[in-house]
Length: 104
Image (cartoon, rainbow, N blue to C red; front, side, top):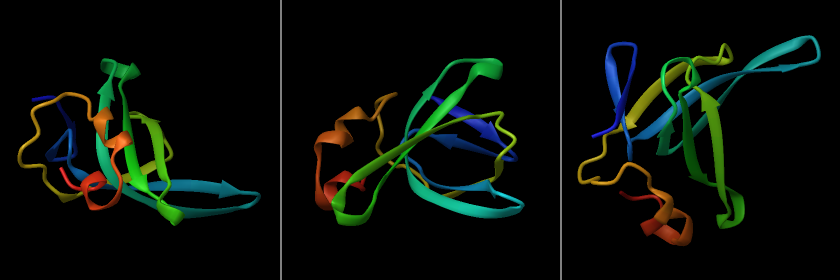
């Protein structure tokens, strides 16, 4: 199973994660939370990236990719661990709608 070490815990494909991201707007900074399913890990060492997919407003799927070593990431929380994931990439979630698109 593919996983990454973040802090004290491992994050696996299919986990529901919350990414706390620092956003700079002019002179102000704030923390923006992005919550979704971890669908992809790629690269190695410093070039490692991960992609998180969520269902946004109007049922539109939104994916966002971050480098694992990004300075803008404040914290990564695991909200729910995946149970039955047997794939390294969950691209099939892109074709699904409704509850089946957010459950793994």
